[in-house]
Length: 103
Image (cartoon, rainbow, N blue to C red; front, top):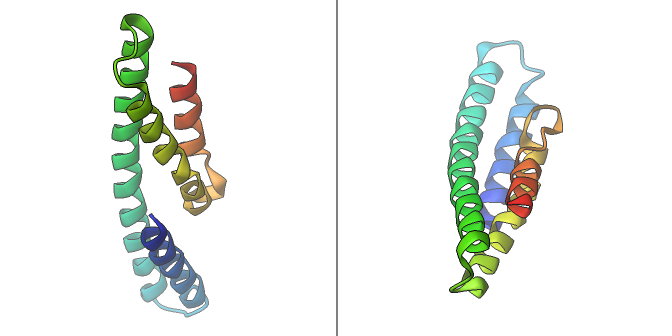
């Protein structure tokens, strides 16, 4: 996750540096950046759904391996930094975490 975070920040910083250039280059760069961000967002949404389902199942039927689920939820929560990359600080991962915690 650290490497992904670092590379996404680099991409975001690069887009911001080119934003002052009067050309289509900066808009194309932002388009590519947000395509990568949206791909990761889609993957995180899928993972959050799986964790929410597993959490609901364990509440209804008991926990067979709570330590494993706990680690997976903790790993997912480490992605909260991702929200800073979204437009206007959209709390996407934070909202997913809340949904998982409530299930």
